[in-house]
Each structure stands twice: as C-alpha cells, then as structure tokens.
Amino acid sequence: MHEYFQEIQKLIEIVQEKEYPEIQKAAQLIVQRLQRGGIVQLFGCGHSHLLAQDGYYRAGGLVPVRPIIIEPLTLHAGALTSSDNEKDPTIIKRHKDQFDFHENDVCIIISTSGRNQAPIDAAFLAKESGILVMSLQSLAYCEQSTRHQSGRRLEEVVDIVINSHIPVGDGLLRHNEIKYGPASTVIGSVILNTLFSEVIECLAGSEKVLPVFESNNVESDLSHNEAMVAYYRHRINFK
Image (cartoon, rainbow, N blue to C red; front, top):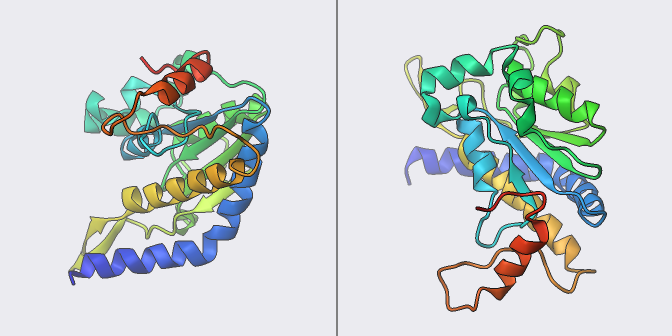
C-alpha cells in the first residue's frame, strides 16, 4: 500500500475519534434550523471553495446547501490572484451582495489555516446577521498569527469549530524539507459528507420526504429533484 493511503487513513481515524461528537452536535443544530426554514451556506477561498462547491446540487447530497461564490476568490480567477484576494481586507465588503443570510441559516466557513482576511471577514458578517456560524479548519495552525486587523483568528469568531487536524503545510508525506501529498480536500470532504449524512439521518426520523438529491444518471422520473429545486429555489440558485 502506498504511504499516502496509510497516512490519509490514519488522519481519517483521528478525525473520527476526536471530531465525531462535535459533528453530531453540529448536525443537531443544523437540523433544528432546517426545520425552521433555514439553509446551509458554505464559504471558502481557493481550494477551500472547491469543498463549498462539492456540497452543492450533489447526487446523494443534502438539498438546502448554497455555496457563496465570490469570483475573485475562486481558483479559476487565477491561483495567485485568488491567494492575494483572500488577504485583501476589502474583498468581502466589496462583494457583500453575494451574501444572503436569513434567520435560521447556518454558515460554514472553510479555511484550513483560519488566519486569512476573507474567511474571517465572512465569519464576522455571518455573526452580525445573527445566524449560527461554524468553521471547518485545522487547529494545528493555531500558532500561526492572524492576518486580520482585529487580531482574531477564525476559531475565535465562530460558534462551533470542527477541527480537520490537517498538519501545517497540508502535505502528509515528506522528502527532505519538502512536504507533499495534500490532505485538506480529502479530509474536508469526509467531514462535510459525514456532517450532512448525520443531518439526513436525523431528518429521517421526522420527515416523510428527505431533502436529498437523486442522481440524474439513473433510471428515474426526476420528479423528486424537480420538487426539491422548486421548494428551495427562492433561496438557492440552481440554474
């Protein structure tokens, strides 16, 4: 077995052991808010934005999930551009119209380091809206100083932290001083899918129709998906 398989499995086991109780707690809070009409909103920059997109309109995934898309913070805007913009203290204020927080929403801020300007500003904006704010981040970075003018790191702003346990530098493998084999996307996806699966299982105890997308690539009349899109289209753009 390649060493990456071994190391990623070890990390998954660590996350399962240490974070599952927090994931269960987060799921219960999300369920309460979904049942009162809220949705889950995901925010991330660069590779973290890939996780925000991954939770959206996903076969087998939770329906009421909205990625917050700020084009200059995405990789297709340019890798260096996205990285620079994440540190810009004006970027969130200039794109405030992309945020649409309503009562009972939940915002999950995805940022492995938890130190950059845009994720922290997004967390502050969500907190100001009075909604529940969670982070998916690695607390291994806690000793890395914040780049935010408030002097606060992400974990000091949000209500709930789910720790991804990603090592500083992201790579699980090493050759001399070079770390390689990044883990944050794999582990982040495992955590989010565990969280949303927990939410779905909780809803199954009380809901006749589960807000889960069926695959468009299996034999189906698609009426379920069409009904889900119609129900949430006032909050989420599925076009």
